[in-house]
Length: 542
Ligand code: ADP
Ligand code: MG
Image (cartoon, rainbow, N blue to C red):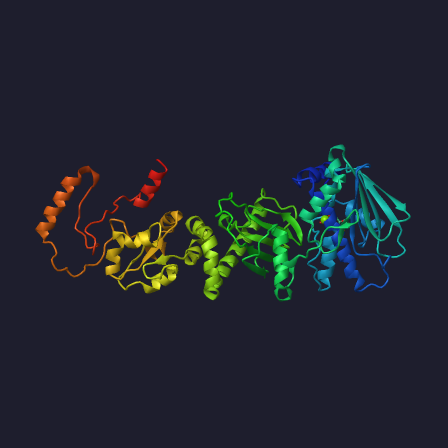
């Protein structure tokens, strides 16, 4: 039998380029980020070579990235003193779609047992993003290998390119972009400055724009904790979060499984939502190897963590990560899970080890934990543990956790009791507490409008039902009969008289052992609406 014949796929390169240029990215401006990342990679590789190689072209060049805008000529130029490319490398790296010289470099490194977490490139498509804005692109490049001639690679991104030798180009690459007519903004200094500050503020090497330094703050999250001074954290927080206060607390951690993560999270001093400002936006920024992916990623953290500031960096993310693709969504979900769990653990530790600081935090941000306990089913248990309430057994102003409440429960007590009221005095002066006090049953005091909603949604804790102490169904144990108590028939007569007098306004009159000092109390028999909710509805005129 004949051997099967082998064919190569035929690719219409022009169309493939078209797809890469027009559908990979949603924002045109990210071409700046991609080219700066490539420049940074090229310098990082050079720095690596300097450790082993003696013979490097133009060895004294500053390891910098320089951008220049020319508003008249409508060009943007970006130059780096990195490893540069030979003629063959220009063909291989820029003439082949989805070939990443950086990935090859990393692979060679890891085969020799080394690692480099600073290299950004990995997919071999970032460069082509420049054609979203370019009429034509010229890449002048001289390799670090001495004796190699310099070349210029040029293309208009429509399917072909030219290469020709040039004379005076120093080591590294210089990319000259002639902008499309409707992209002239990218030849404006303010525009490029804004983009660099957004995406590339933490790139390791100096970035200068028209001679002025852009990036002056370090990517603090990648440094090790014990080397970082308190002031550095504060300065970073202010810079990164555009904040004016000092952070209240922070969590700086890294993880390697299931995803590689470096995170630096801050809790601000104040809860600005509480001040009546508008709802906060998620603002923990997502980075990959110091390069911004998204300043406000929606799904990186659950809604109730929207008060957090800071940075999450993962080497495992593609720079062009997209909420639209399943695979990328799954990655974000994984990050979300790991970070949320870690932050909850942090809060638990705070509550145990720094109770005063935790209580101050809680007074300001507890409302977010309540929102989470009520709405985030996945983290409900951990969040409920973090809630704090005053109770009939605490002093005024002191709180208890539900865990501590449960530890004090009486042996026959099955439910956790709470009362809603404007403040301690209101609850203590009402009739509902008496029966519980007389039996030494602890009752949690809830002062905030959301508490009722929280209690109803949380429903139970540690297998014990959360029960409103003013609900009609509450059954309490018998107390010894008091002296001068009414007889059965007296009770019957009195009840009938009250029912006749009040008529339709009440549904039932019952003798109850829930009262000790007060003569009567109104309870709620409605399964769906508590007195508190009824008051709220009335206030809203419903
Ligand atoms: P990636 O960065 O993901 O590898 P790119 O399309 O951005 O993909 O770049 C393709 C390759 O071109 C890089 O891997 C690198 O080998 C080479 N390259 C791009 N820009 C430069 C540069 N400024 N200096 C040296 N090599 C570069
Ligand atoms: Mg790249």
